[in-house]
Amino acid sequence: MIPAAELVDFVVRRLVHHEDELRLETVEEEDGSVIRITMNQEDVGRVIGRNGRTIKALRTLVSTASGGSDKAVRVEVAE
Image (cartoon, rainbow, N blue to C red; front, side):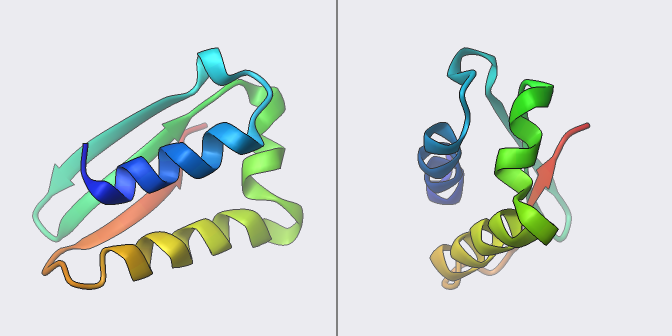
């Protein structure tokens, strides 16, 4: 697992109520990596947050954590 994925896992596990249904998938693409989060539907709102503030903050953390990397790392919530 890449360090950014470990950071996402650490943060998201503390937000969700159904930890056992949380799945993180890292997909390598030409322009970088995508960390896809799959979870129980009840937890989606907790991870996205009001007006998307929580997911935006998480994306900012990941961007900062992977700042030294040549490739971009994106975070997506799977529907």
